[in-house]
Amino acid sequence: MRKIALAMLVLVFASGVTLPPAVAQSMSCESKAMDKNGKPLAGAAKASFMKKCMRSACAEKAVDKNGKPLAGAAKNSFMKKCERAG
Image (cartoon, rainbow, N blue to C red):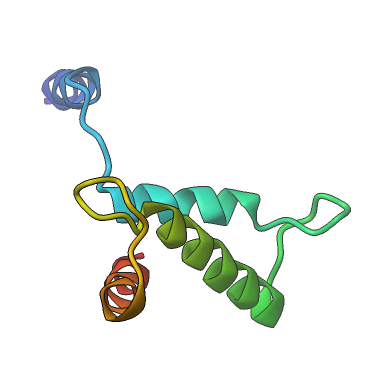
């Protein structure tokens, strides 16, 4: 039974399963949440960093189908949706 479970696990990872963008984005922000001494942030400092990191990551993606940056209500709507997903 263990061999079958192990084989299934190897197949899942070998098939190239990718994470949803919001999860991957959150994980990258999580890995960057370090202080100047290399220790992980905690509490309010971590929450503030995560919010700033997610906002900047979403701002980079705020473009329309023609590649022009979004502005006004369209940008606000996109940013709210993107930040909630993260």
